[in-house]
Length: 545
Image 1 (cartoon, rainbow, N blue to C red):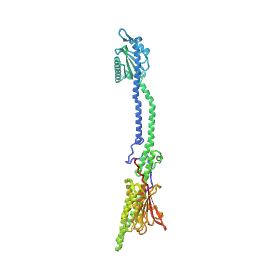
Image 2 (image 1 turned 120 degrees about the vertical axis):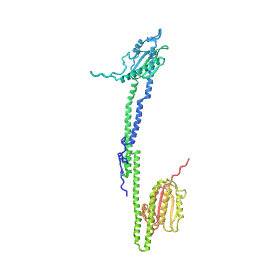
Image 3 (image 1 turned 180 degrees about the horizontal axis):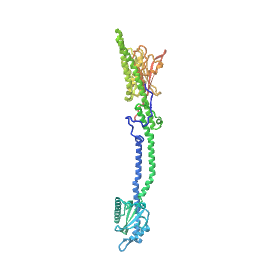
Image 4 (image 1 turned 90 degrees about the horizontal axis):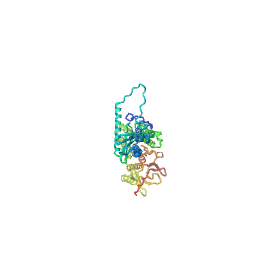
């Protein structure tokens, strides 16, 4: 018999079936690692996009250029007026560099900007840094203690600095040269100190003649972008914390429970447990709880099926041993028999036991294949009226003299339609008819009555009645157990295996129905046995519009 059911409460750190432990990832979970990776990837995309600020930075530079252009246009318009004293109109218009420097000193000293004035030959004549206290360049390094040897500049650094300065000078010269041709130039370039600046060069005109170029530079773009990035850092850190917390919660409430269920399933598969039982997961009201409850129900069903198989195997072993023991006893007695009559009696007994064994093995084979046949055959619409009519006609066609008749009473009105498998259903009614005929007296009658009761949950009912001795009241339920036989005197021994009614109940319950036994009341006791099979009716087909 089966042992008591052992439940699996495995934790996720069990070894894999191959003997090696699962590779450790995020908490030992592939799903947890995937959740963390996806969350971090989305956060990284957001973070990189916020830091790049390409579109915003381009708009900022364009806006800065437009501001410098407007400012430069206003300044060159003032510089081009002879009344200011910066330009001279006779005999040839030219730009007075001394007056221009004074004018820049007195009228243009904005913080964060640099103004430079070039003459018609592109030679610088004024620089706002030179007429103010602003000192271009980077802060000096801190003072060294006395006696510290002076650090020797690296030749590569010096060469790089010189190259950057030369590139900055060439870029400025190209910009000024373009402005001397009469068109305002705007670009983003590097200054002599290596800083990125927004530069606008506008020609200074006297009437239509270009007298020089005014260049305005603003170097606060990087500072503005940096300030915006620093302002976004708290939001990025909060988003990072939320993503990490979300990953942790998903790992704890999704990935880890799935790992525990997987480990518990491995315990069942490795036969260290018979069922899964994780109460802390089964009590959850989400999909994980549904999965845990489904797995527990599945393993409990499998465990019950295994117990039934073990019990069936034990019953089969017991039933097969009886005819085998009888055969062995007869064979051991056969050499000791003196007369021919005794020998024929033993031979008849052997043949009877062999037939009994053959019938028992056949019924056992049919019972063991029943589950597979029920699962393999797909349910379909079955007309129970036609099925019973065909079965009864076969019995009547092959009825021998003295055997009980089989009479079928169909329902009045429409046919009885059910959803099921006609092969197993036919076996149900053949087993019940065979059982009723075996108990019927010679010349008796077995009646099949098909009726419908729409007030019941299973409205299709089939009654099989006989005129036999009936069933003892205490055995009305026992008759459906495997290998149970109770035959009246004179019945051939071993003609029945006791599996027929057990198979009937198994098939009927697989179709969602019920089967029960009762005695038909008579004047002096039971007038016979009655078996009732109740089945659900098929839903009517949907009508097309």
